[in-house]
Length: 413
Image (cartoon, rainbow, N blue to C red; front, side, top):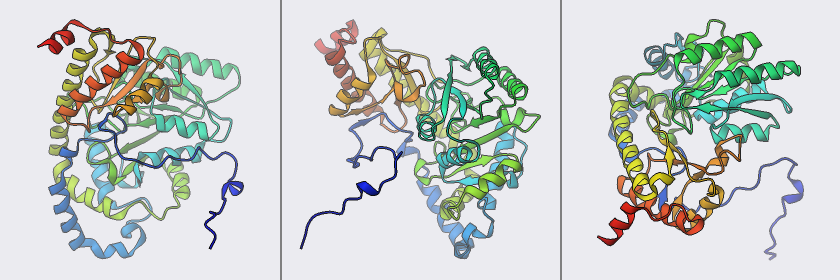
């Protein structure tokens, strides 16, 4: 019997992404991805919710959409409508919301509805890698708008919109993560949100608001969502339960005017997102969300403190960063001679996984010495140990940081 394998290569269409590598497990010290704190997943509450909702409504699993229609499980949409009103100021009803399989599916549906190859979109210069990757695959031109410590700069956005109009180009949307920005952790002030809306209306360019991390704010208070402030309906709002409950549940949502929602709904051809996940989330979140999230946030804030202390101890002044206002990421600047794409490879060989900055920016040169660290998933001990290993690798590869006084003193004691 022949052992030769069938060759699929000649059958593959042009334009496919590079093949994925086989997964070999997480690094010993993993500071990558959007993973959350495993100790903070409300396992017992979710177990109770599973048992309760299945006994009460389990027979609805026999119907696609749980007899709630294609936009998702109605009790979950009703919970979201109340939550969005309370937390983000969004006045919507359940029928304005569609449940999707994580915010990644939300990105895909918005892009499929609005974009064609050759289109232009405006994004924050540093932004979510998943958004940038999707736009690249679609053949869309991404124009990065510079940030400062308060998020997207409105003067730069205004200049970009004016420049494109002078060339007869209308960008398809302005993509922003205004509330706990990824990767910088900033929060766009309300006055800038109002200015963005003004520019959106002036130039006829809608706003795509990604509020994935908005629940995880240290102070517990946030500006109203851009969607909530809009008077002309030119905003699409997305969010997720990945950061507030658990990423593996893969449940997100879209809030949009029906003109857009109906188009996206026609493209959502998966026969509905995971039913059990929606049922369990609705059952758990209605009574517990408002107490679970503050507890989760306190734990994340403590891990951030540990990370910042470890960086100060191991890297000293060689590591520059602004303290994020919430979330699960720290955006870090190392000296210019450090190439974080190369540091990523060397660190991974030593058991430390990091996200190199160029993968999260439209300006690869600017981000060349920057990196993103996720502090949510590793324990406090793993954070300290992992940063120490990363510093040793960085010293070996780039001579950064030079041995600093407090590290030398610790090594001798």
